[in-house]
Length: 76
Image 1 (cartoon, rainbow, N blue to C red):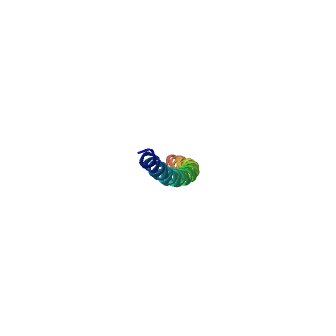
Image 2 (cartoon, rainbow, N blue to C red; image 1 turned 45 degrees about the horizontal axis):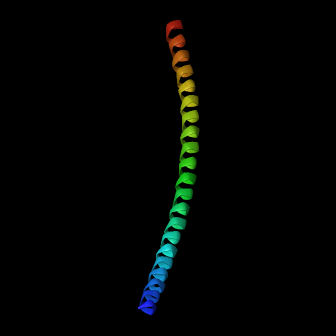
Image 3 (tube, helix red, strand yellow; image 1 turned 45 degrees about the vertical axis):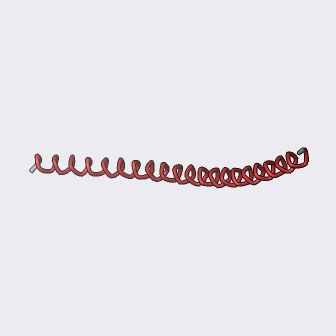
């Protein structure tokens, strides 16, 4: 009986070790995916900021053109 119990325990420990390895591998994969997602998010935020700056500059130029056109129209 003791031998059977010991064999069962050994089997259970082996199963737990396998499960632990699978979970560890999954955890590493998820950590890598998270790292990639954070990097992509950072890149997207930088791109959005750059686009916002470009839009602001374009808006300022357009406003200046409209203002000049308005001044030219009223002078004529």
